[in-house]
Length: 332
Image (cartoon, rainbow, N blue to C red; front, side, top):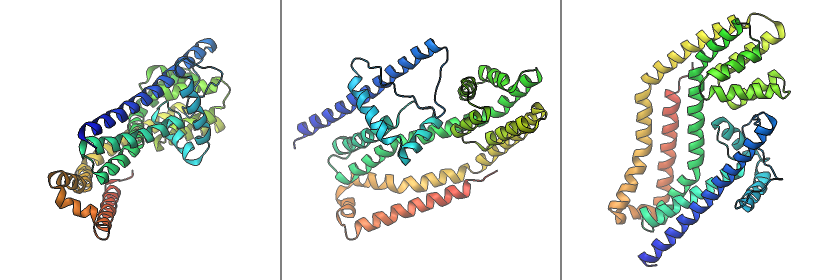
């Protein structure tokens, strides 16, 4: 193939990916509009406790009906499988309003986009590095969701002491547990606001308080929150002064957060060393392949010796990164 043909083919692939991605986003925006209209009619903004938006098969919109129908069919197949349930939970914890089918489609688009980017743009037809970039594109959505979950969890845990202070003040003002949670939802920041609003809405539609709190813990997998919910459930069963209990728990959590910050500062050098040791050999190999393809090409062309050496090297990099992460991950 000539250079002109390669550029035309690469541009066509990228254009197709962009069109498919726009179709997914358009379908999602139309469904959000439908939910908004339904919420206005009912007076409640109801969301399932896992945060996934339910499909409305009776309503179709112009321009996205076929895409929505195909994604709904694929979602019905995937969402009941084991990995589909896991993806639903992860998307809910990241507060990303995508279905399992759309998340799977993003994996496919990322793989094709990464391979096309490597083959046509970065590595000029080098199949090995293009495949590696395709694998990186395949896992890019999972990495993004994992980082979103981590950021959201850290933000929630950092807000938890102040949230408990608001909760305690509301209880001491004479509010019930549900009323105090509603007051917290009005005054707290994100993501605490959204999570407490969901608990209040679930209780308002008839779900038991303990189940609604368990749904909250399913969405926010936090040990500190587990301690709070356990205290609330015990108080509802045996009685006691919930305000004093939450006040003590809030003080304890505040001290734990302070200690975690100090440990994170002390272990920052070890974490950076782990990142450097993990990514430096890979980046160096890519750089040498670009600067001197004949020298590094022997490593990839020799299947008897080169490929086993690459596999052993990647395995040792992964083991070293895991060991370093285990060392610097100190539980409190």
